[in-house]
Image 1 (cartoon, rainbow over the protein chains, first blue to last red):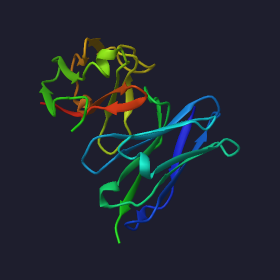
Image 2 (cartoon, helix red, strand yellow):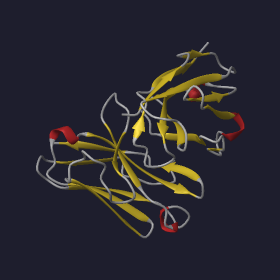
Image 3 (cartoon, rainbow over the protein chains, first blue to last red):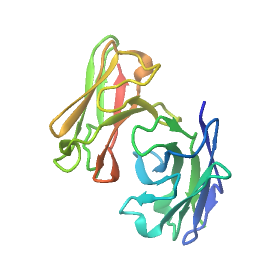
Length: 115
Length: 109
């Protein structure tokens, strides 16, 4: 059974860079798309972007200038970097498999942007 | 403001049937892109409920069904149960971008 686990700091200061890693277990990261999705407290889901195992990416246009998603197939991990964060970036961040019809999700990790 | 429009809330009594709509446009749902549906119970990650407009993953009861027509899609839940109380999200695409609806809160009366 494929499992995903997000890891990274739960608190980030304004203007700094948010960095999260998703570790995939129970299956290979190869030959799949992998996504990051976030959910601000009390609000809906927002797609951040996805990466294919080969490294090709696609990002939400509203976040594109600040987002980088990368993959490390040797570690079965993929990562998210979001730069110049503000309080509006406070959210639960989920890593998922696929770029639609996401059947596998991590449990989510709350990242708070605050000084 | 989401590109895919869902009603903020719906409600129904146990045993009843409810539907949740997801309205898009000619550049997303109307362009032929698939629609997927997710159920999110309080404090948990979303769970895939319907994929490819009308398909249920293994383990999802057949009380849940999906359909798509034109620029809209619908999720129907029959035989409503208390455990169905949750937030529901539709998801589709616009070109290569992923879109989510704003979500619908289902209350079981």
